[in-house]
Image (cartoon, rainbow, N blue to C red; front, side, top):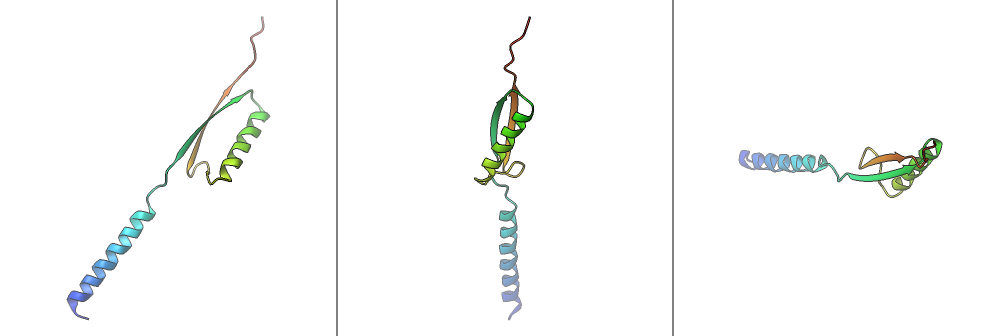
Length: 80
């Protein structure tokens, strides 16, 4: 193999390798879900856990491709 052909081969192989590495490092799309939980305590934790589990069955994992913005609301009326 001549020097020119060897150089062309190495350049082409290097470009292919770099292209694959760049493509592998592209981050996927990140989804954001907003959830409003009424009340508080253990029930809220159960609902949030169930939401995470159900989304995971569809391929959405919190911290990898999903962010959950959860907020709580109290439905208690003021007394007095």
